[in-house]
Length: 231
Image 1 (tube, rainbow, N blue to C red):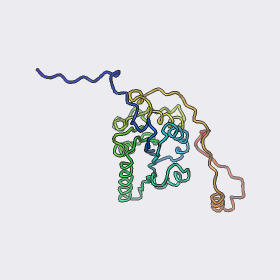
Image 2: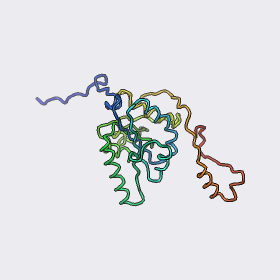
Image 3: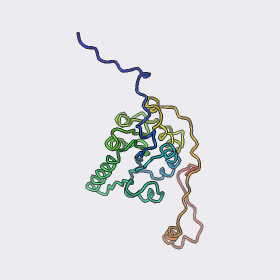
């Protein structure tokens, strides 16, 4: 007689793993944050990063950013230079070289998890799957990209009804939920607290005034198209 195919375990019997062991201990733990576009969101991610540090005492943050955006990470002092991996897309050769360098560095770090702060980019998910094959990979999901969702271990349903800062906190918290609950869990609205304020150095102010020339002594109105109070 033909052997019957094994039946999938019911939801109650499936693994309810709570992430890699490193996420639940005081041992050194390397986590990669991926943000290749809209670097202004990195400021909004500060409450989430602070919660991640509180949850993982041995946290060592890595960042994957574009070469042009590296200055922001350095200015915010989020990680030492050797853990900031900058991609250079100025040409095909530079792109391949910088991608390979970043991938090798991430594999050597033995990442416990990756966090995708760019919402639905597929390239990030592919890079994370190569850089962190045995860890957790958390990213936002809008229900339309099955191939990208398959590369995430912690897909989090994105909600446009929540502020970006709140959604990034939810993304961090998904790493610590039961695996069976993480993908589309209903997570309540969270308070993100006070966001950091930027204070320019005098030399930066002088450089801007020099660029403005005669306009520097006249009243200026700065219009920000983003209507968010936190921004």
